[in-house]
Image (tube, rainbow, N blue to C red; front, side, top):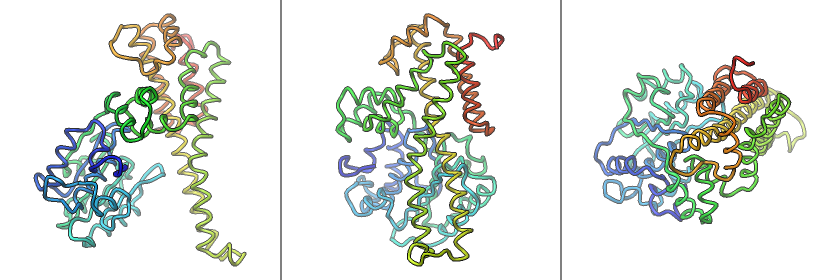
Amino acid sequence: MTVTRQGTVWDGLVGQRHAVDALRRAAGGHGMTHSWLFTGPPGSGRSNAAIAFAAALECDQTGTDRAGCGECHECHTALAGSHADVSVIRTEKLSIGVDEVRDLVRRAALAPVGRRWQVLVVEDADRLTDAACNALLKAIEEPTDRTVWMLCAPTVEDVLPTIRSRCRLVTLSTPTTDDVAAFLTRVDGVADGLASYAARASQGHIGRARALARDEGTRNRRREVVSIPARLTSLGACMTAAANLAEVTKEEADLITGELDAREKADLDSSYGVVERGRRPREYAPALSSLEKGQKTRAKRRHLDVVDRGLMDLVSVYRDAIALALGAPGRLVNEEIRGDIDQLVRGSTPELNLRRIAWIFEAREQMLEFNVPVALALESMMVALRVPDRSVR
């Protein structure tokens, strides 16, 4: 989040007035507790809300109506990720393991450096392993007087009942298109037309909206994805679409992770003196192996994340077709390809397009939950999207 152009720490939470009101009151001393669970759909700003709340708790104005002023040193460092008493655990892996949580629990037992709170934010708490959850449970059950835990997950069901029952729930919602467009214009200076497109195309996902507004390459990749349904006219076209989607998403994921991988490798070489001394000490090989294993896991997750985003873009096309066929009010998500959507409406029924959405979610589950190779899952999905009924296959 950017404070310099927004004012208070709360202004970056788009369309979350009720949640902000509750957090602001808690930061002011009304309804404060030691453990919080932030839930909401992807892009709603779960982690941003938690970090903004952490900044408000550390703010020089805490205890007043101006808690979270966004102007003091405490607010700035908390938002920037450099505050000594605000720790954020996030992972690029498929899960958060017990060792990471145990380290966080040890940190939670320490007294804060400053005079306020020790705040520990766990992003993607739904990725905690069972062992990690067990390690976390006792710390949440018996926190120290000046420790605050903040967990972030898509839904309450994604967190163990024993943990969520000990947390105060903060529920965030998907921001409206108008809210997102206004945010892009106000904070990033995006032109109205582009802001409107990015807000609709992102379907309320703030991070995605900003990427679409800022980067032409991101917009072009999305246009390629949403044009797929109109091209699924033969078995060959289905196989080609699947291969292209797998390749494009892999390239995008590699662009994201490649620079970080290289930087981590350079840091490892430097720490073991490989660059200066020109030789590899005995301890270097296992450290390199561990690094490469972690990078491979991160690359896999990143690829799945990018594919998942593409699948949601596909869903938006079939959703538009259903809305258009039924005469639902409001603008289409993909207004720019209304011609393709008209073609879908003429060649199908709302019921068929609803089944197509279900098949997309089935492919999503195969990849994310059952580890089916991306290319295989996409090929099966594309063929399903083409045929009018599964009995034909």
